[in-house]
Image: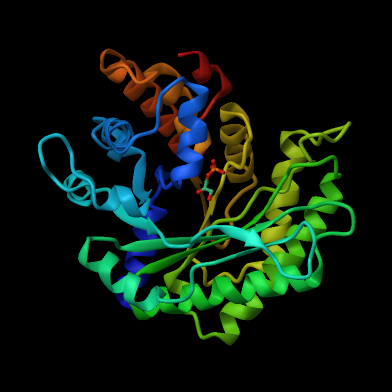
Length: 336
Ligand code: 13P
């Protein structure tokens, strides 16, 4: 347990956050389509190498979440990716869920699969160098959904995963993502997020998960992306922190937000505004996928000549989000 807590605390060390580079095959293909790059094992490897070898990233990035394919790949010099990261002081982690599938008898709702055989898979990931893990539950908001049925089965699965992760000696990142697609209000987002966080911590407690040795990866509480009137940065920050204060025990070392399709600048501004609200029981940090990588992908375009520009774009977002952990970030920094 002492080791789990030390890893969890290192992942939310001051000024640093997590890079989520664990896009599954389908998701990375979507990202590559947008920049006109064919998704092959080698283009995926080259792209991840660009991120993992960015000089200076370790100043702002504490850990990287890898996908099953990536944790087995090597740099062009032949070093396994987990070792490439470890050598810089970046902690390697692994996404272990197998994606959200339709939930039986619940039209429009989802449940995440991947529990069968997970103990054995954890043993292999430990051998491959993983120190922490991630599992994502997906909760869409819509007409009459989510149901309590969906929230509780998703929370139950998250806790089963988290218990298995701790048994294997890995820090579980528990990710209940309430999606912000739709035209719902921030009040509705608050209500659903609060219900889900309540269910998650009830299940974690019942399934004996040590809260000191885990991290929560929640959505921020936002208005739906298609809502007519969308809440501003301050309101989002206040609603998100209030929701966490009501539902997340102080024993949890840190909250590492997902970016969930927000613009890069919004994801950074929200994080900064939350940290500006004053000390909280837990660290407030990031575990961004898109909000750290989008500018890098645009700059890269699959061309090796663009690697330095792509690395500079990634480093800039890492630096700004690291600064948003404290009072260091200013909007003017966006233009530098
Ligand atoms: P986004 O920051 O792009 O939402 O990705 C984070 C993540 O890991 C989702 O599972």
